Each structure stands twice: as C-alpha cells, then as structure tokens.
Image 1 (cartoon, helix red, strand yellow):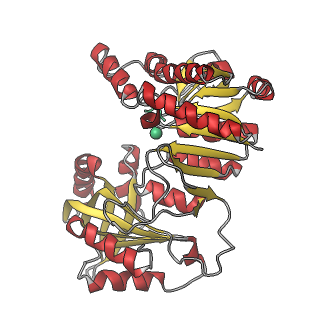
Image 2: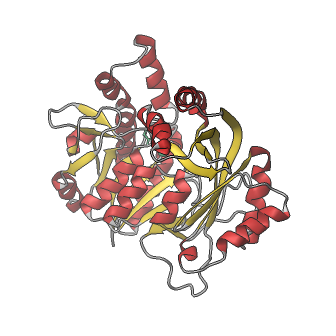
Length: 406
Ligand code: ASP
Ligand code: MG
C-alpha cells in the first residue's frame, strides 16, 4: 500500500471516453489498495484554443486575465473525472490549485510554486477518497490565479508528490517511457527501464520532450521517484531516480542519443585577440535574452580570433543583427550565419568513470564521413554540431556504435 501521485496528460483526457478510461484505470489502482492523488491537464488542444480566444481580444493578452482564462481547461477535466469516478462507486473530490492552496509567486504565465497546503488532501485520503487536482495552476499571496508555464501539470504532479512525501510520481502520457533516442529516427530505439535525473535533464533539454524540464529538476531536488508510463497500455514505463543502477555491473556507457534540430550557428571572424572581446561580443546577445549554447574560439596566425556560437534557429536573425553592429565597432572582418546545423549528443552517467567515449563517438561519425563543426562536453554528455543533412545518419550510427540497438 502506497501513496501515489498520478498525472494524466492532455491526450489521456482528450475526450469524455478517455476520461472514463482513466477512471477505470484509477479504480484498478484503488483495488490494489493504493492511495491516489490525481493531477490532470486540460483536454488536448484546449489550452491552445483558449490562448487563441485571448488573442482575438488583445494582441498581447493581459497576463493576469490570461491565467484566469487558461486555468479553466484543467477545471473542466478534474470535475469530469470525479463524476466518472463517482459513477463507478469511488468517492472523489476535485480541487483547483487555489482550493488546495498551491501557493506560487506572482509571475503570471510562468509562476513558481512556493508552498503546498496538504491538509485537505490528507483528510480526504484518510477517508478513502481519490483526490483530483487541477495541474498547471496555483494562486499567489493576494489570491490571484497563476499558471506555471506550458506543460506545467508535470510540475504540479511532482510538487504534490514532494509535499505529500508520496512513494512515487507517475506521469501517464502517450508514450510508454523514455527511449534511448527518438523511435521515429531510429526504429531500433528501446525503452529504458531507468534513467537518472541528470541524464533525463540532458535528454530533455536536447529535445526529447517527454516531460517538462522543470518537473525533472524539481523531482531531482526533492528526490521524488518519477515514472513515465503510457495511459493506453500496461507496462513498467521508465523510472527516473537519483541512483545509478548498481544492480547492473556492466552499466551502459551511454544511455541515450539526443538531438536538437533547432540550432543555428553564428561566427564573427577576424576580431582582435584581446582581453574583453568575447564579453563585448556575447554580452549584447545575452542582454537581448538570446540563449547561447555551444561556443568555440579559434586563434588565427595573424593574432585575430574567430568566435563561433550557436543559438536557437528562431533567434538567428536577431542575433546576427546584433553581431553585425558589434563587428563594426570592433573592426571585425565578417559575420556569418548558418541555419542548417543540428546538435547531436551522447548522454550517460557511465562516461563519468570511463574514458574513450569521445573517441568512440568521433570514430563512428568519421566512418560515415560526417564532418564535425563544433564539439562541447560536460561530465555526462558530449555534443557535436553537424550539418542537418547528416542528422538521421549520425543518430543511427551512434545508436549502433554505443550498443543501444534493440
Ligand atoms: N494544459 C497546460 C498546457 O497545455 C498544462 C499541461 O498540459 O501540462 O500547457
Ligand atoms: Mg504535457
């Protein structure tokens, strides 16, 4: 018998039929004797529909009113699920974020949870009720409704699990777990039984968009065991935890191959090789709120530098314009932008204690004649920037080279 927080995403509650299927699933867990707190998203497409309505009223909708509006999506699904549970003889009670009192700061549309009042939920659980909470929303100190950012229901789930000291937080979604890479790119990708928080963060930030990144950070911080599973099929899913899997003596060197198609590369060439130059180039980019990812500097024989970095593709033109202004001030030779690059990364805790991952990676890419344009490493990740036309080939060959093929 355990206390489990289960979050069901938008596709799992996309129709009344699906909500009934979720109710049936919950009844099954109750019959196994578990205490359950359920967190729901809005019906799939609903949040986008509401944002669309808002934009018909105001080009940039007022953030406070937008939160009042978009938080209604989750209020619909929690009530419907409770009705379905009651129709099946299971006592249940729904709560909006404000009713629970999920206290957040007042940053509308991207609020952060500060505190959760667990008293009412505990009392209901003690009476054998299923508690159903609206994801994605909270309330600030002054009673204003806030929302947590797109995909925020995952974070609600993890935060409730942390506050209630639940045994596990289960995220039910339309995939049956976290894969070694995107199965649409590599057919032989396989579901991982477990992955660490750190690995998941590297995979998630690189485009394996299974979970909202913030929810994984939150789970890691409070050490909440997090499991990703399918709402539509049975199976153990993928467990995300703090521990490396010590039961497996021959731990995989690499757990997964991640990639990001949204990269663009910018170079400023022929800048003076002097202290402060990198800062003069990158500060205005940061001030414009453009996130810089991989950075490389080469020193040329004539005592000038080339500095190259990557940004999100959508921000390339903006970054290029800023860079051109800086280039003029510094008397740089030229600015070049390229929006045909992608990032491919190998991720794994195993590389902490084993050498040779980089050379194996580069060898695999070389054997396919793939040119590496930039390289960056962290403790558990090695990333390369390559031309987009090699993306599939690179991911497939790395997946095979690191023994991840099914
Ligand atoms: N309904 C919200 C969204 O679409 C929150 C969520 O689904 O997690 O972003
Ligand atoms: Mg979601």
